[in-house]
Length: 329
Image (cartoon, rainbow, N blue to C red; front, side, top):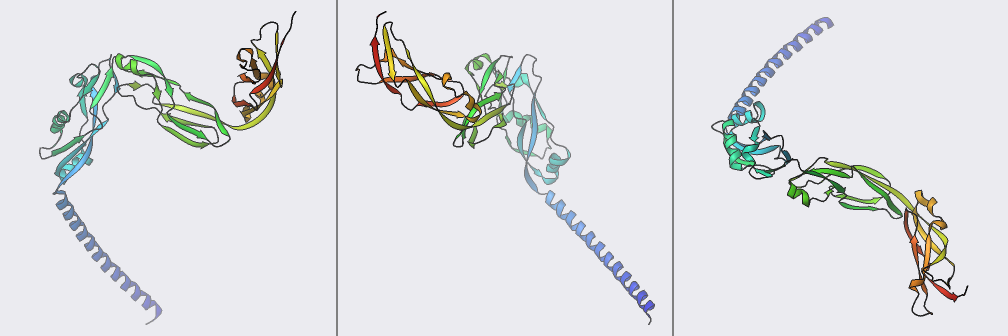
């Protein structure tokens, strides 16, 4: 048998085996599909419990009413039924949203309420007769409203912010730094400020800006839900300057002299503000009205003014000797 005949024989054998294999594989796939379908149908015929979300909203709100704290966007409903029926609620036809007329549930002058039993009654017509409502859950069942009463309140940072050693926060700001709040008049009188969510920042060594949400105020609505917090961080440096001592409240005909006539002040300031550390911008005084009872005691000194932006300033000595002289004109 020559090589050409071997090639034909090999090809015929291979084609035969492939046809045989394909037929067996198709038969296998067919049985697999049938058994899977049978298992699926058997499984879906069993009874299950499934939690689904149903959207809810308050409808027909009068024009003069502002909902300050709405109901949750949806409720969680646990249903029990055959698997076939539960699939409809999950994939095919979700339960239609529940629309709650404002007038039916506004039961107080600034508060409305919906109960589980009322939602149960509203849900029942939307379900198959075989479906059982096991439970109805929501984050809360109340909503609040007002008649347009509002005022502007400041926004305050709520939390703890610290820097690394030798750094400090030279400036902090919120944008916006105030917000309009809507609530009923009585509640509005008790609301003094809006607070950010808790901010905890440690070991800060560079400036930062971040968006911070505002805490919800029960029964009220904030027109802005967040603020931008900016923290300007600077590195501390220390300088020592000499400042003359000035005397104050000295009566006419009397001279008050201090020894020494000038004192050293140690100044902690940010690097960005180091240019403001000038002796003429600091004022140290010795007050005649605060002379000690005994002439042997020393007179206390005070730093009465210093440039804005100084973190800390203290004198190396805060007492001096003094001499009082009288003279005649």
